[in-house]
Image 1: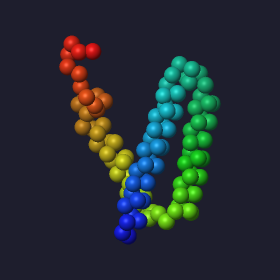
Image 2: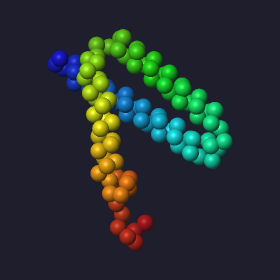
Image 3: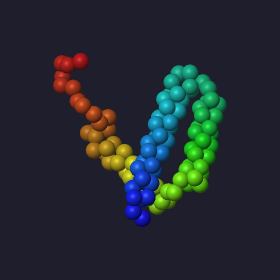
Image 4: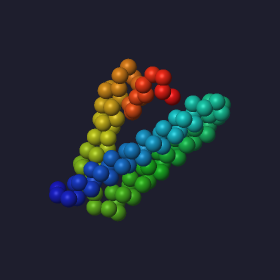
Length: 104
């Protein structure tokens, strides 16, 4: 669909990246000592994230001329890239620069 598709792919990836970042923040809060004792707060955060994202996605598709298939491709490609990076990391280690022994 031309240039419309390229912007939709980028926007799909950006929306998915924001979603993953918010899930990471919620998981971090859940896994802290105070979060384990307050599951209601974490549940409320997940519900709020879901509601806000659903509303924003609806607003995006209603107001902007997006190509739905290109948007879905962008969201899916980000997920596939994250899984690929995780699988490529040796022994489940986090990807990134490695330090030599003795440095620290």
